[in-house]
Length: 392
Ligand SMILES: Cc1cc2nc3c(=O)[nH]c(=O)nc-3n(C[C@H](O)[C@H](O)[C@H](O)COP(=O)(O)OP(=O)(O)OC[C@H]3O[C@@H](n4cnc5c(N)ncnc54)[C@H](O)[C@@H]3O)c2cc1C
Image (cartoon, rainbow, N blue to C red):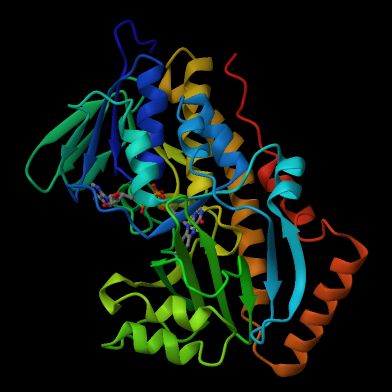
């Protein structure tokens, strides 16, 4: 069924993936409605690293340069041990030379603002989607909201995050994401008085990362192995205890924020790849269908890739949704499944706890970094070298 009028899309979820899909479709002449259960939008998480592949995706929807302006990481970044000893270094320049773009650390709010800017003001609507009919070649898809509204459209995009209702409706046999065995804390702190050590510090089953934001503040994240579901009353005291004795300025970064400003999240990931990223007229993207551990910093970047490749595949098929979506799955499922696996492998290494295993890991990293200065960047080639699929 070729659309002879402006094709219509309902996007479920105004996260990074959903809004990027809305922008891409809007640019291609679709009439788009985005349904979001939490308005005004509260960005999930404090900061986010937009990688060169994510910037290329953003370029196709005209907002890449707005995010590039926020690049603040200068000089070198290092992987350290908890006592501060350096295991490996890389630099912002080496990163730029290898991948053609910087790694941009931005607040989530800045990324969402950039994605909302190109959309007509009536695109975003309040609505909690509770049911989805995937439709078929001869009838539209439809979503129903908890508020009692029903929306029909040529295309439904499920960008509703890790607990996705859209996924449950269209892929009912897909297992829920699995706990990765570690929890995370994230916050934005003022710049510490002692020098900021940009990069990550790996201990036994614990990681602390810190990076500067464009506005002179610092985004930090921390992970630690522990059973799911543990919640302590005082988050700041909890994180301080986990990183007690770690090198400066880690304790200062933690003490400079209040417990209320720390986000705590148990990490889950899509351990079983889905059979497809679509059903009927419904396409799934981002965490809704391929949640990954945060170790490669790729969850949001993959959602951006999904969004622009989805629009490109639809454009190649003249907006004939039921022909285009199998192509979307064929294009994106192998790629996203590989990134999910790679991120998990990296995460597993960061979670090692036994003293001998961690000692061996640190020695291998130190020696490899001596042999090749680009050692830390080589594994990222396949991930960050991505280019958008041609539109014709
Ligand atoms: C500690 C940590 C650090 C990370 N760091 C990075 C990083 O540096 N770089 C990176 O690329 N990724 C990173 N990620 C991953 C990244 O946060 C996610 O992959 C990304 O936010 C997924 O975007 P999304 O649009 O798919 O989903 P989400 O951002 O979860 O958005 C989903 C939206 O859907 C809405 N919604 C949910 N259900 C419904 C419903 N039924 N009806 C209507 N609306 C609904 C939600 O309210 C939300 O607004 C990190 C993750 C963690 C845990």
